[in-house]
Length: 606
Image 1 (cartoon, rainbow, N blue to C red):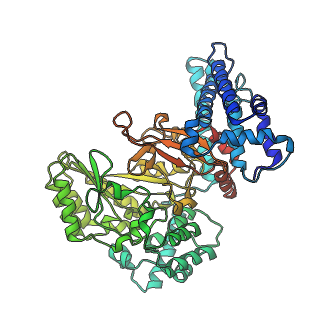
Image 2 (cartoon, one colour):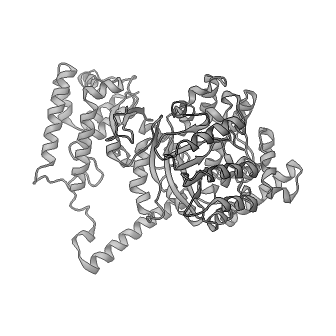
């Protein structure tokens, strides 16, 4: 609900807009006046004598562009909403001095920042936008004097990063203290199962002994009541849940005041939103959760193709532990009744498709987790693809580097080395490391083995509420590079209802790339922020030309129009996406102990 004082603060942010709205008899008159006003604002900041700092001018022009989008009839039709109508009604009835239950504070904050932004008062650089005292000292210097002052300023940036690491206790599993905790967990796990020390190094043992029982997990590392209840609810309703012994050993014991393992717990233990969404749909109707509409991009069973030179092959339909944020949960939860390895005929038909499509030069073998398959099956697939002269690159998508790194034993490494024949054919591994706390000595050793046989390992991070704090992804990137993993993609979470618990606004991803990732050396910040469009694939979030902000809903949600990669090549449909409200996200961060003033520029990332 938007309160009267909050509304007054928003309308007072730009008296010109307030007078314009109040003087309009209807929405169309308000639209005409607003369009004229925005054109005047645009002309003013483009004049040679505009006193604003060039960076403030750039932000002002961006805000004007966005505001024009928001009030256009075309945007209203696409979004089936008019934020102009909402703000006009609020302004014309402001004299009533009432609250607006149907409008959120998130909406008013979006409007407030735009009202200020279109007149150069964003407050990013200075209160006035003119920036005389705020300009760094090195700008007015030259030569060595400028270099020394700038170097000190850069040191302050590094200090900011390091202080954030300490404040938020970002850590890895390579630290001696963390290793000690995990060794104790390992002992308890081995004892609880009645196993031997040597069993721990057998990947098959980990696959056979995944944990599914809440009481058993609680005895080893402890569970919050809501965690235990969620696990039991999942099990009672037939929703798959499991944790590998190795991954469970990375948890912290509950009640010790630590929260380093929060990302680990929430990414594998079901939450109430997830469970209710799955049960609401029903386990017999999981195809409706196919956000990417893979059925529309599957030329034959077990193959998905969205791009010209690469296709996905899914020979295995299960994982030793299911990630709650998974894009393919609808398949892994038991859709179509298939579990494990695809039928022999299905695999042969898929391989036949690859043989008959020489245009496809690269295959991504994923699933599920294909490296759960036996070495014999993996070698058979590599042999089949190896015989196709047009296949130049083979990727394996796997999370076993995180959950069961001992899978990368000498036998598997030998098979991969046999078929990694550069420059004839190159094999790569793509994994999901979500938190630096998931990095372990065992992972580092496995990656080292892969690197030694010429196989690169890439990381696709899914950006969630659990790993989106200031510099958290930078800390992950740095530590991934230290163990030989190359950051590849930073994924916006899919717009799936069952994973809404994890959602982070697109604006935060853009902010992270500009204000945090940019501080990292080029070989560290190699990942690209992307949004996956159903049927069409990845969209580069860093490119203005690939998306537009077209509407703000009454709840504060931003509505984006995404343009496909085929833009300029074919008249393919665009995609409309409703994001989560920024203010709701900031409140969640505040509840996590974050100072939301550290994120104050987020409103100006479009």
